[in-house]
Image 1 (tube, rainbow, N blue to C red):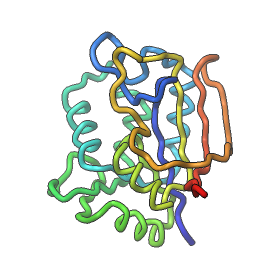
Image 2: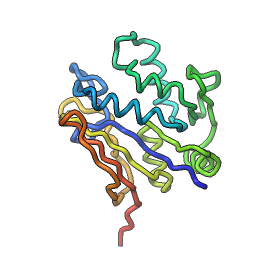
Image 3: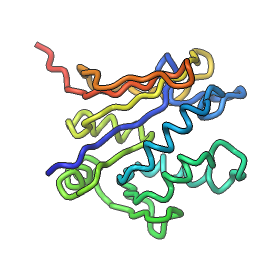
Length: 195
């Protein structure tokens, strides 16, 4: 049996994973109770997280510098940190600042291909943009879960999610509206073959 791999990402309408400058945080200030409850339920399921080194470092730094009241400590994020995690890196060493984190040295495509064969629970990655673009190109991503926040960050957008990615056809598997204005879209990606 092959474990399902989900690339889970937050996005502005114009395809950015975050905004530099200004007063927008990780949810662009648009989070509501429905989104937060849904995320907590999503991360309440048994699964293994997979991160690239840069995203792991960002999470560890944000958590270390945050207070209990900050959105970085929302219940779903606190739950995510308790899930087993694989960090694909050639530079990090253990121990990680994660409850059950393991560093796996190697190429992400090789590591995730092996994990998909060996894991008896689903795999999920939140963020890790360049790693997940490479995994998509290698046809290792089963689901792309994009949570689209109702903002356009044309002036301050950073971390273009699919910049430099291969071309894909997407099959919509699920969609839902949260808090009346946030869209969650789950797609099955297939590498587009140009003729």
